[in-house]
Amino acid sequence: MFNFLDIFSCVQIKSLLKERLNGKTGGSSEKSEPSASVELNSHNFDELVLKSKELWVVEFFAPWCGHCKKLAPEWKKAANNLKGKVKLGHVNCDEEKSLMSRFSVQGFPTILVFGADKDSPSPYEGARTASAIESFALEQLETNIAPPEVVELSGQDIMEEKCGSAAICFLSFLPDILDSKAEGRNKYLQMLLSVAEKFKRSPYSFVWAAAGKQLDVEKHVGVGGYGYPAMVALNLKKGAYAPLKSAFELDHIVEFVKEAGLGGKGNLPMEGVPVIQTTQPWDGKDGEIIEEDEFSLDELMGEDTSSEDEL
Image (tube, rainbow, N blue to C red; front, top):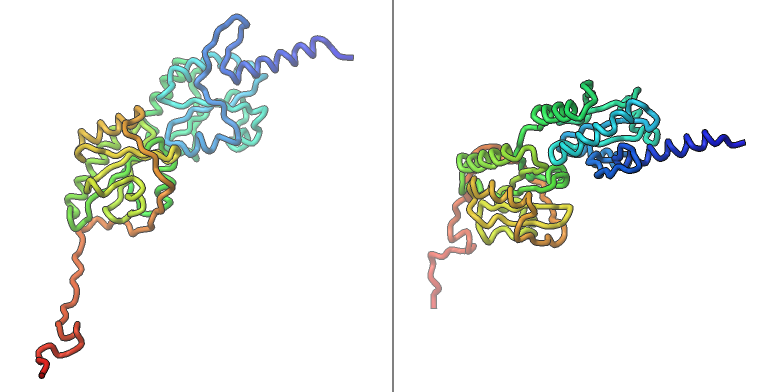
């Protein structure tokens, strides 16, 4: 025989679970804005969290847990206040046993911080209030940001790692080493590194290639007509790019990066996927001019040109 109270409790639990996943804190008359906390599961966790350059703070909860229910409105408030700065997510451990086991979750709620080293998350052990979570997350943002880098595009793996995972990949084409020498190239790289430092909190990557080393890439993004150095903003997921049309100087590049982050102007479709050549990374030295062996006209013609034809 069915017990009405058991049925009611079951329905109530399901309702609370639905509200929890939708970011609601309860109350039939409450008009609640959606939560910025991302629902994570075994299908999207690696892609969204582990492959991300951003700082993630993740709550592992159980819908029946009283402490989790108490945390819910504070977590939602923190997530909404941190939107655009720090990513917050939540995992329903009743449904995601594999993630619970993978990260050794033994109690609820458990809050883990996935910083620069995504393979070694650290536990959050502070107060379970929105203000405490926000303060902690912003502190972590300063300490967990990976140092900026400008990487040479020397193979397909670099393209996938740096440009495939970034929201925008800024690809620079620098002059041939014989034209700029090591001193000139290092000045360009130092300038690009200062730009990367300025935007280190943004999900961008900065990559470079020497002129003529990645010809198919140059062809796909229309580089060459403007000369070198040149830069394009790439969005591989959308298959689009935008060229830097102003001078390759610090102020112009900073403005270009800002504009690209806001959607950009003059975005163009990239036809197909460029072939990335595997090249030897630059050794940091000046280039060497390869001198060809001298040859005589006699050797070229294969005969004695000093003799004259006789009539």
